[in-house]
Length: 345
Image (cartoon, rainbow, N blue to C red; front, side, top):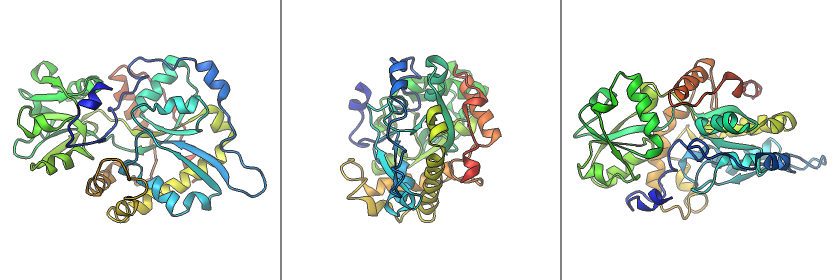
């Protein structure tokens, strides 16, 4: 957690440590058999008397605009209309969503596909990816408009700050773009845009949905491009359930997908409408301004929306995910994805 404490006050509680969580870093999900025995709790089961069905979801990080669709769906009664009583579990720096699934804490969680697939492959975790909130992963190369880096080719001879957890992703992007990593001066990054603002580096790897706002607040203008657009084609906030939940709670999961999609669709009708309404509820105490959430909400729109509907996963996008993950040594297969629930909403 040391990197988190070193981040600048310019950008408090800005984002989770990027992309690769504990399992993707080689930390196994210890005690898997015991966890599996705990799966199938009273969650996602109703009393059969017409009362709402209790259903929990584990978010991937602390409350910010990344989860607007769920906040709106709760506030506007979309889950209740589906007969669900949603228990929304906020994430945080010490939360690994996959562990919540295995412990029976929730039948559904938002994860990153690399960590989930690693858990399946390395630990035998019984996970299934049933949807993707972000069609395009928001991790990007951030630079200043006065010294723009607009493509991987522009990184040649430049200094790029990269978090340790994203080194393989960046190297994969460079390889796929035909750039020798030796031609880029890669230095450590501590989730602090100050060196970029001060001109000490030329670019950094960070979330394009959020950090440009922090740079703007520091008096500079930022520009960015996504790793996704240059070969590292992976989802983010994948919707994951256990095989047990898929078998026993399929109807409730479909209802969750339907209500959540409605919440996201409502959000994107006007990205400026809802963040101020949540200032004293979901966003209270995060250390971030509503202006930051407004920026975030608009920036993520093109990364989440799909012509096929929120959470969609086309065969082409799944294949692209598997190919990109293979570049960093994550060996997934098509059977780890199930698109049939999306056909029911």
